[in-house]
Every structure is written in C-alpha cells, then in structure tokens.
Length: 123
Image 1 (cartoon, rainbow, N blue to C red):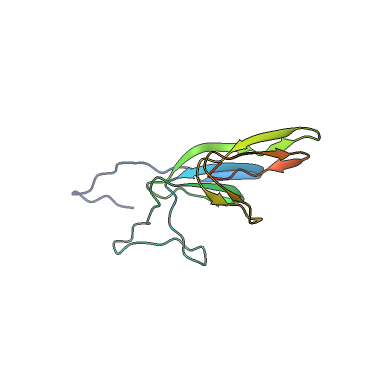
Image 2 (cartoon, helix red, strand yellow):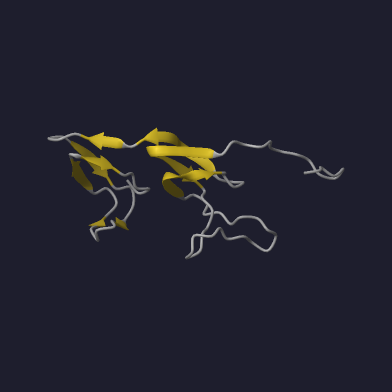
C-alpha cells in the first residue's frame, strides 16, 4: 500500500481475531452476508454493516475485523454448566430458538446442566 499525497492513514494494521476451541466472541456492527455467507459490498467497495446489531462468533478460522466492526465481548471461554446446576437466562428481545421455542423480551428460563451454554445475541 502506497499512500498518496491527498490521502491520510487513520488506522494501522490490526491483528486477526483468533477464537480457539470452546471459546466465543461478540462482534458489534457485523458485516452483512448473503445466503452463501459471502460479505456484501456497496458500489464503492466498502463492506456493508448491520449497525446497532451483534453477532456471536464461535470457533472458526482466524478472521480480520472489517472497518466499522468492533469486538463487543473479547474472546471468552464458553460456560460449562455442571450437573444439578442451571443458568438463569433473560431475553433482551423477541426471538425464536433453533429448536422452535419462541422467546419474548424479558422472558426468563433456565439452562440446566450438564451442558455447555452457547450464547445468543438476544440473551
């Protein structure tokens, strides 16, 4: 990359985000993706962002943050819930879980162990 006289460098290179096994992170203002999972770009070649949204990313190949994306929750270990214990969860918005259960904002429920809790952006 060669900077021209009329250009200004506003940010340096950043490290790739590495999520090891059994960890996750939360990305604020994630990029828009199509049905195949490819990043969508506007007419100027800039990645389109989902402003005021969050995306939970689990273990995957190292990835860079696109301009505008930020790490809302740093890389964190997934929570293991032992036998005879539970996590009390509360929904922050209406959503449908992967098993088809509908949750409304401010609903509370228990995630009982044993198991590993996978975070959701609306919980």
